[in-house]
Image 1 (cartoon, rainbow, N blue to C red):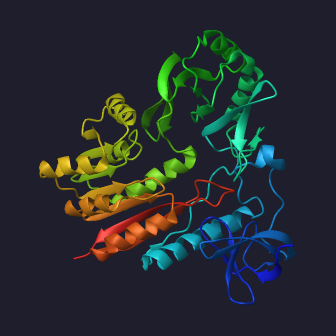
Image 2 (image 1 turned 135 degrees about the horizontal axis):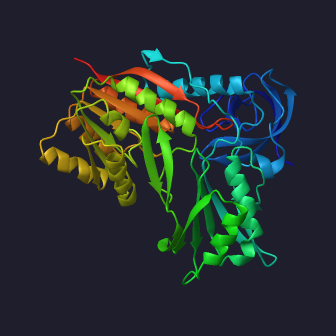
Image 3 (image 1 turned 180 degrees about the vertical axis):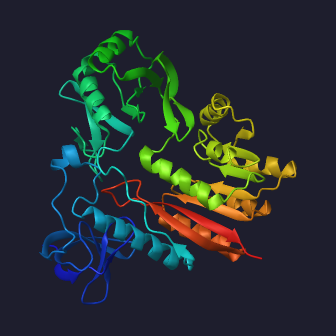
Length: 429
């Protein structure tokens, strides 16, 4: 029998688990708990000197503990904080963000702004990637249970937009008309248009015209399908892009190109970036990891020149097309590795007044951070989905004369531990 212990949860850390201490003082991390709760735990594993435990029972529950808003794995998959009231989620995310920036970065913002709550806390996800496995002669579509290869065939998933849940039912009903697949990606626009990406590891894809016709009969919101064989595009039916309205702009996202899953919160995040940039119309702005132009194009409406860099060729093609469709002529986009793209601009003797960074979860590379400094910006606006790598990168900028002026958390992912935020770094002197 594994060791059990009664502990008091001190706080939550990034990743959503609670921190407690055994009688020996050894730290232990516990899932599905809240600060202040006294719980019975069972030590489960030790990784890199850190103890992890399973929750046995909650002996003294927090007043912020609630019943889950969904039932069972089919609805609740992806809901990592089903036991925490929404107001408490907002407070905890703010505390975790500030604690992480202070603990790892050694800095605190001059202004820690209140978190922006989500206008909608359920069924907000506009992009979803499903795994496909064959079982009992049928193709099963769902998500792997966390930490395993057990497939959960989600149904009316709590976080997924209703139009995607509906299209998933239609695809399942017609799965016998599909060739063997490994993944199905279903992407929706805020207006309810849906585009599918079908991935196969077979030698080729057969015609999917009949399947597309039947699917549109069941789900007329499906505007197109793109098929891939071993990650290479093999076919395209219908329209291959979604249209996204962003304030007074119209953006297109082609065949799975990235856009934020919570579009209402994306609007708030874009407004925050513009607010932090404090543009007068005279500035040159660099938008690094620019994607389809989500930040670059709104910035272009307020700056003299915007240059976006993105390694994804298809996303840059979208960004260029989005500039044209919105009559924006002061935006330039470069499809290249970020380091090479920045080097190209330095060779052109470019200077930048403001640099916007929106890196992946791993944060920016050291070379990128160094090259950002070479442009001598007066301000860096950093968009982050990972407080740990944000804190590391802000610490670097701080060492080279930038202060953390404002920090704005944005609740992009309600009912999960994920934290999105925007940080404003201002050059001193």
